[in-house]
Length: 373
Image (cartoon, rainbow, N blue to C red):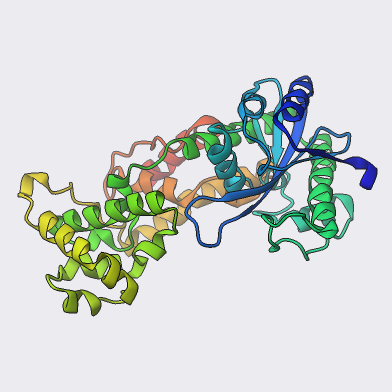
């Protein structure tokens, strides 16, 4: 194993290797990072393999990430990762770029009906009959020097990823490979579209239950929390806890004593940001009605669950026909958006979130299901 590990510790070496990797059909990528007390992940190690050895990039020693960004964006090199949403954040933070085309081996396992949302260890066991050690997943990747165990763990991860990719490709029909890359492109596009702080309130729990005036307060609180989390590089809940948002918007306290009594309100938040929060609430509550947000739609009524089940069955039947795990076929949010477009009496419209091969294969069947009902 030691002979298969190569360190990249300076800009010139990184540029040289990235140029060589651009001539390869694929590269397997992995990252090790820390994200305990920060909003953004802190990269501790990047691993790359094109099949010949593991290359470990020390991000603490690299200043010029442009060659790596160019590799990530090279259209002729498939980037292979496993369950990659957090890895994508690491790449975006380090280089300003995201990998494309992207092949996620966790998705590929679902397309072969091996299992949904399979962990890396399980997939390696299933395809390569290798049991991976678990000891280093939560170790300190910012310490230097890294331990011998850490180095071996990181190198083996990316070397096994190459073999997993080859094993998956040997079993995948070309059509399914196209679909996996399509899903990878959507993952990248979604991460590239950063939600504006002013829109963060739409994802707050039970926001639809508030009046429009209360939603204006919630919007201000969520936007402030999002901006502060990024500026201070702290987790959102460290700035203002999730469970405090809704009662703050509903009750709109006007003094520090009332603020401190809010559910799950941390005393440190009251001390550090209490006056700011009170001013935010006061200003947002005083907005004229024309500046309130449009009311969020209510969730579908319980009676719609039977219809939702019928729509889900369309995806399940198609999944069985294609030998794909049913969870990958139709997302619940997509089906709910379809129902909300015309419930209860129609007409219904396919939502924008149903696109690509799913829209082509199942769009009309979903509309027919609703028309028949």
